[in-house]
Amino acid sequence: MLSLKYKILFTMFPCLLVLDQATKAYVARTMELYHSIPVVENFFNFTYLRNKGAAFSLFAQSGFRLHFLISVSLIAVIGIIYYYRKIRPDETHTAVGLTFILAGAVGNLMDRVRLGEVVDFLDAHWSGYHWPAFNLADSAIFAGVFILVVGMFIEERRLKVLKH
Figure 1: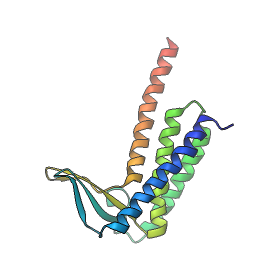
Figure 2 (figure 1 turned 180 degrees about the horizontal axis):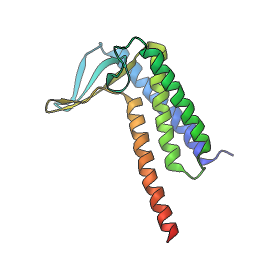
Figure 3 (figure 1 turned 90 degrees about the horizontal axis):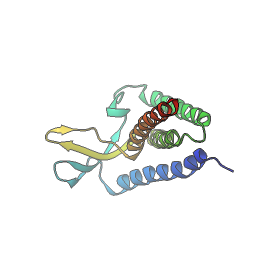
Figure 4 (figure 1 turned 45 degrees about the vertical axis):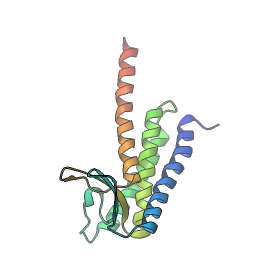
């Protein structure tokens, strides 16, 4: 019988990955590159972009970028899977956080391998400040890190209670 951590992985991972890839495919199929659709005026748009680099377009102009980014992504995926196997079955926060991060990393890795770049379309801005466009894979990575941090605080608090 599967432990909870593997039930989390085998249910959430495919859902997150399919959602990421489906939204990217939909945007690429239905929008023109660089086209923007306002969703919340002066705050949020759907804007179809292609990011050749990493987060915030780092390495976008570098000649070695694609091989480097694919290698880093593969190492991260292998590291996450290795670490996932080591977590205790009751470490639910860790399992959920790592599953989100893994799905996001694999989603963007699939884009890089297939397209040589990543499809971005979520575009937040406010009063002249513009956040770099991102996608659901990026959001999953962010959410996963957030869940891991919250989980660490919860675990630390649980251990303090157990000491007293």
